[in-house]
Amino acid sequence: MKKLQIISLCISLFALAACSKKADKVVVSQPQIQVGKPISNSATLTAGSYKGTMLASQTYTVSGDITINAGDTLLIQKGVKINMTNGANFIVNGNLVCLGTKEAPITITDPRRTKTTGASVLGADSAYVGGWGGIYCGPTSKFCVIKWTHLDFGGAQLKALPFTGGNSLKVGAQYILYFTNPNGLLVLEDSWLYGSPDDATRFYGGAYNIMRNTMEKCGGNGGDGFNAKGSSHGNMAYNLIIGGATNGTKTASDGTTGDECQFTMYNNTYINDGFRNNGTYGARSGSVEIENNSRASVYNNLIVDCNFGVRIAGGPGGAKVYLADTTYDASKLIAQTATDYNFFYGDNAAITGQFVPTNIAQPVVTHPQSHGIPNMATFLGASYTFGLIYDGTPLAGKNNPMFVSYPLPAANGFWITQCSVDNYNFHLAAGSPAIGAGTTDATKIKPITAGILVDPNFGASEITAPGKDMGCYQSNGTGNQH
Image (cartoon, rainbow, N blue to C red; front, side, top):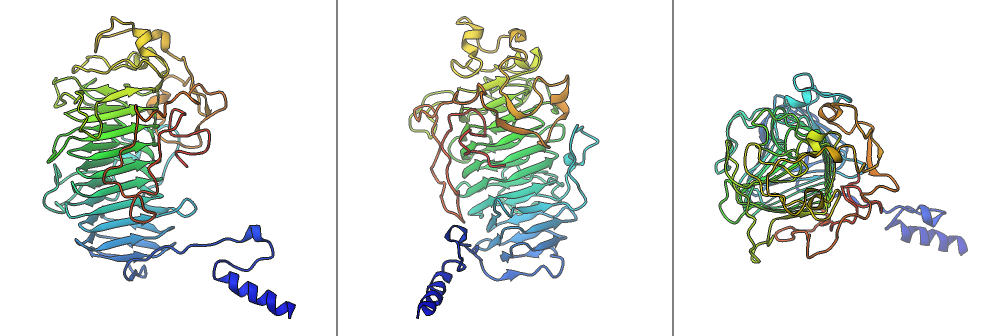
């Protein structure tokens, strides 16, 4: 009788988990959702319309554009690898969902390319050339959700316009990720973007939650990382952006069909950005850029050896960059553009002399921060005027953020060619001055939630609140998980 009871108990538990002698080893495995019919990987996927599910841990080869029609959904399960050939793209008129996991991420790549470590130089590194195309989401795409996914070696030139109504989208565009629906949602979280010849992403309209991603080697001789335009709004937080050509994060309202472009940018880590732009020096930033009637709230960021600090454009100059919106309007998602509680480190006077960007190519209106490290308001003094040149020599090599593993002070020019994470560890070591130096005061920095669905499959996993440690890695283990 006793033996029968034990068997009965095990059968009951089997519905939840495998029967085990040790309760602490019981693991409940939740199967991933499936949409429509499975897509077979028995043959190369040629150009055409697709919907349904790419099954977990399978490898697919794609030789032509994958088109998702309006109203259809393509879901990619964990562990899938997609080898993109012939510069193929994802043309998303419907919906795309990539559900990688920490243990089994998705990989979309050009199989001809291999990641390299160490010094990276334009013209010698294939990361800046463009391999497969990109993910282009049109005006009828309601949502694009990308989680735990490697987007490697994207940015081949677009051979034909994929849809009508795409803001500023032209033949020859070289983006990894493009979205243009003012009523849509794009979620990009816990993912990696490696290599691109131009803007890694470009957004026109809609709601966005861009969190906990790692971006390496993006932009050839120009191009931004996360480039939000039009009436886009949302959050860019806990991202690690290393070796970008120009800005890591950027807002601009050009191409808008509705409200202003508005983003919170908090707890990001920017390393070695802004040194591959061959445009007019000073007409773009090297970390954060706010321009053209847009608003942003910029707090708790760690900016190390970047060509420029947070740049708020103050008027026209030799390029098409115009006045950021710094007015107060309580009806907006961001009542007023503001930046404070950021951490800056630079290895030479040229870098530290642009912690507060100066009027080189165009006027700027960046307030010297009165909190954060260093306190630039105190350093520059009460009489400092927007955009004036100042001597940053006393700040060079000071305030080392103390990464767990990364050479600071860096050898001369190291910040120009070290553009990938490699084996370095950008977590903060015990005793770092960046630990606890941020702010979680909701009256200063508060995530945008409007239009952002929180859902394990079809929305953001969460909207992570600002953290007290500066940068993307938090000492309590939250933040960026790479």
